[in-house]
Length: 152
Image (cartoon, rainbow, N blue to C red; front, side, top):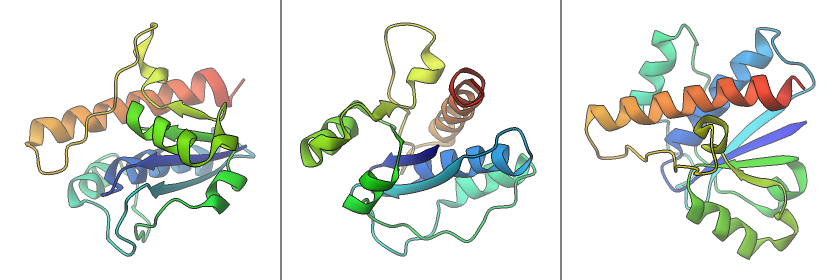
């Protein structure tokens, strides 16, 4: 399965989700999973948000070299599952690439536990509280994704 994480411009959330899932693959929890990330309005070449890099390091995950890139048609063709952070991102992708419909899901769906799905908070330019909230939402969603979907 090929999983693509997408967020808006600063790609810090999709990068964090990619790295957390990649860690699950590398530690042997999962197999036959490829992971990538992109931004709908990313500035190509931007580095990951230092707050997200620090979070990964605190979890014992060594961040890989990463540069932001914009989502493309090739990503749509490549991905089996496209996980977005916000409802609006799902709409943008499905409007731009109608063939992606049915493969685009909100990452928050895996942590909601019910019919109401929250967006993953975008902490960019916000307080440390917002970063911690976003990181917790993403980490919990990845744990749930691994348990409920990717491991059968």
